[in-house]
Length: 246
Length: 322
Image (cartoon, rainbow over all chains, first blue to last red; front, side, top):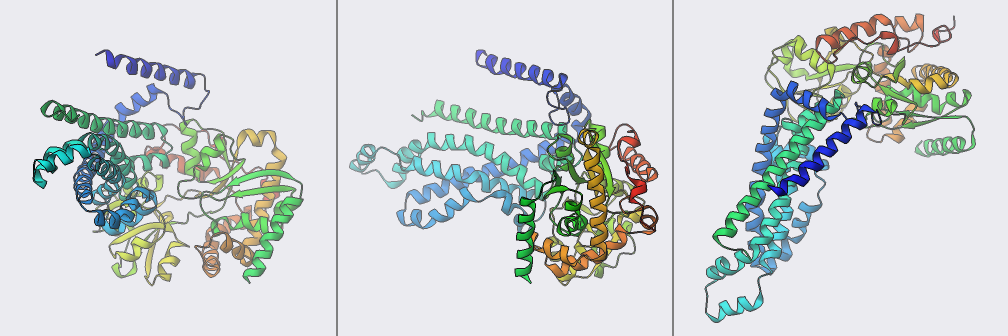
């Protein structure tokens, strides 16, 4: 309970400051809407905001799950073969460096409007941290423990399940927390071009000069990211109770 | 020819560096195209210089927030639309006023494939397929309401005609003098429906000013308007030199296409009204009609004062000389 007090207090202070800034007109309300305007806009528009948030959450979640799955298994494959690891390295770097804003319009041509493009965008943006961290985790298992397993003639499957995966687990969970946030970013960018969700609402709101709707969508998108990161944290704690990761 | 244009650009840059004059910034809301031809003509043909102005034309792009740039004093002049000015006033950004309307008839239209042979926009919007348009824009809201319920699926429009060329069931928004030409260059004949025919006919592109700046510098505003009107006159009569210049600035559109677009946009800029009253002149009736339409579609919450939205400050001076 005590852990929640500092962030809540800081948030209340920030909200109060924003109200003062708006009241004194230091920043015009059409650029930075004060909290009370955001609240009344949310109440007025929740019938549009909440379904859009649900769609964005759905796409971000699917993209994140795909990243978590494919990132892990590709990292595992690469950790078992130096040849594959070196051969696929340039393509892996592509996922890190590709400017998603530039290729998003192409994805509409490839995947069509709506959910397919949004999920693809979410996957591309959130994939690399899982792959990179998981691979680092697999390559980080202590050499002396590996030799001990070999001395006891442990099979490759046993080495994988009793040594490599537990060694990689802390790295993997850390990457999932980063990937969860990036999945939301990729989703919003995908929705700018593919339509639907909070991204589409942000796009329309900017044209209507509704800064309040833009901020509300940003807050909801952050909320989705925070929720997904929290779920990863809970899952990590459960795993730790069942089988300590360190 | 490219060498000549390059020399022209260099000469203009040297001239700009050498000349004195009042410095102002003009922010565009898109890339150099014929809809801004009059301003580039004023630059190329020296009309800004004649009025002792050093005008820096800032290129825009998708979603350029020109109204916000004006309202926050980042630029002195900008191209925006009448709807954006009305919405800005409704949101509290009241320091923006229109001075000159580029188009008397809105160039907005919806492109469909000629092969689908729609007899009306209503039929097109109630057909199968997808329409690419900018959701949230007042004209989109107006047309959607007018022909409600629309059956066609809505999707974001991000510029160009790529998806329109690829998929026969796609229709899209565009300017009636440009996107159809791009589609025809891609060997796809089009049938275009003008938004003006629906009764929604705003001043789609206007030169606007920050009102604080205008109050402090009325003479600069007057001179800017004179140069703008002269530039548009030159562009309407002899667009070639300006189109060569714009083709260098915007290499996505070749010179020949600029020429064709300029020709097609002409009847939207120069009408019977402008021949009597002068290029760029606006009327209270048109602004009032737009305000009523925006209220109807709930884009704004209250009626603004029309006199706060626009003015024709030098109406007598801007009438064509007989």
